[in-house]
Length: 408
Image 1 (cartoon, rainbow, N blue to C red):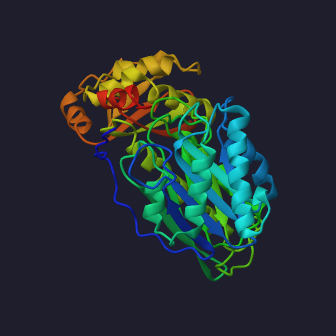
Image 2 (image 1 turned 90 degrees about the vertical axis):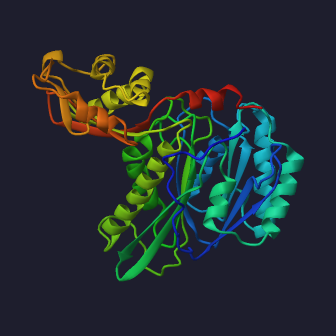
Image 3 (image 1 turned 180 degrees about the vertical axis):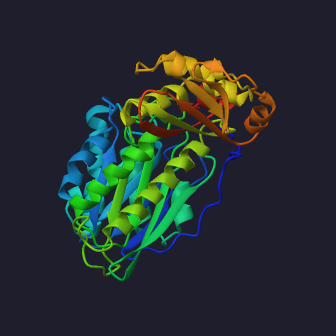
């Protein structure tokens, strides 16, 4: 499959080393491709972990086991397989995960439950035990690699490597965060649609890390959509090694907790936007802001209705200021709305106000806005103070081209 780099791609950032984290990659050859496809991250003892996982009713064994493992709050390693999601594979899929966990645990002399596994790619094909075993063996013996190498290795239909970083001052100590993510298609905001990994040297209690990650997820990963489809494998994990030497964070009462929470949220937002920018076939990055709803939750659902509408997304792809399609998407959302109070705009210019076209509406500046790569859609429901923002991309023929032959 020949994938052209997304026109919305951003350069890979210069990310800091995170004390207590070592990255390695290997070629397990899960698919017939000339690239590394297994990523191994090793953590020092005492590393805290938190995670959010797909709400799909048909998750992979990796997700099912990860949900259980994260309850312990401790991690020593992460293995990510690309090219095979190992989902819908029954006991054979679970057997592969258990083999990987046991193999890495033997290498590190730790509990298998401290080894987290993720897989991404084709659904319905058991992860080959031999390739997995050989891949892990190569990975644990490999030379340490860069963040960018690790980001490339976890990718499937991604057209560019994705990473993000931030820092914060916590009680006089500087803590660093570095993260990588993969995601391009099968992206819908039903927790965290992709595979994302956040690493920090902060010392933080696992329960508090979980609280912060879950809160950030609601305003970032759960606010993106490419195609309304929720993956069987979605996982976001955060690992904290404690190497920064700060006083351990346990709640918002601790000095620097707010700063760390803001840095974590910033990283999550960056990662979420990167996934949308690499939406399969995407040519435009779209921000949808809904105000005036009866509640924030209602605004969120309305925004998603707009973002997931094929008619809205194809109109944006065609650079057509067809605000009637936005009206349609608001109306079908199943949320309170009043046609005669509804207002719709593009790029800061109102096309319709209070249920009617703006009298002196000039479509020329709107058309010019739609010709760009960064598109803004504003909706005012006119009923309350609820608000929400959702990010999506346009729908082009490139999406069909990629997904029509995904397994080949």
